[in-house]
Length: 181
Image 1 (cartoon, rainbow, N blue to C red):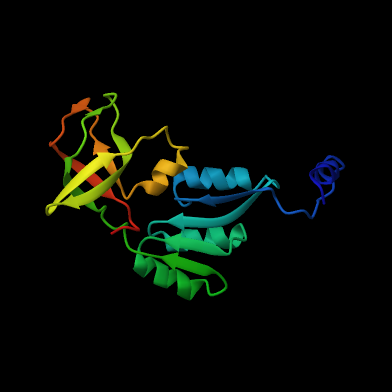
Image 2 (image 1 turned 90 degrees about the vertical axis):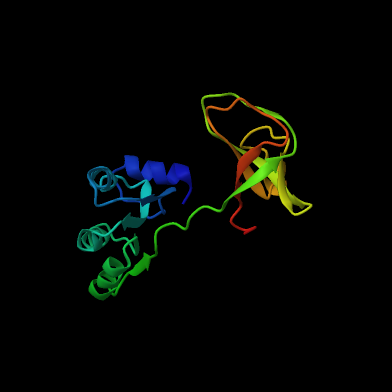
C-alpha cells in the first residue's frame, strides 16, 4: 500500500493495514514523561512502538508492554529483569549492568590547538605511542558529518570548556574509541 493509499484510507475512516512509517522506543517509559508519551502514542496509527525501558519498575513495564502490545522491554536492574522474565514469558526482556566506564587516558598533545571556549569539545584524533609515551593529534575535521575524519580517528581529544589554547606538549585527556580498547 502506497503512502497515498494509506492516507486516503485514513481519510475515509478506514483502518489501513500498512505498517506505520515511524518506529519508536521509549526510554524511561514508567516515569511521568514516559507515561504521557504512551498516552499520546495510543492515539497514533503512524508510529509503531517497538520497545520500552525502565531502570527497575518491572511490574509497570510489563503492564505497559501488554497494554501497548510491545514485544521487547529492557531493564537496567538485573533482578528486576529476572522477575519480568518470569512474569512475562511471551515477551523478550533485555537487561544489563550500568554502562561501562569510559576509557579515558592522558596523552601529550602533538600539535597546538585553538578551540572556541564555552563548550567541551570531543575532537576526532589519532593516538600513537612514541618512545613509550602516548601522543595525540587532532584530525582535520569539518563537523559531525565528516565521516572520513571519524573513520580515521582511534580516539577523541577532550577539550574542556574553559580551555581555548592548548600548547604542544601539554597533557590532555583522550577518550579511546570502544572498538580500539
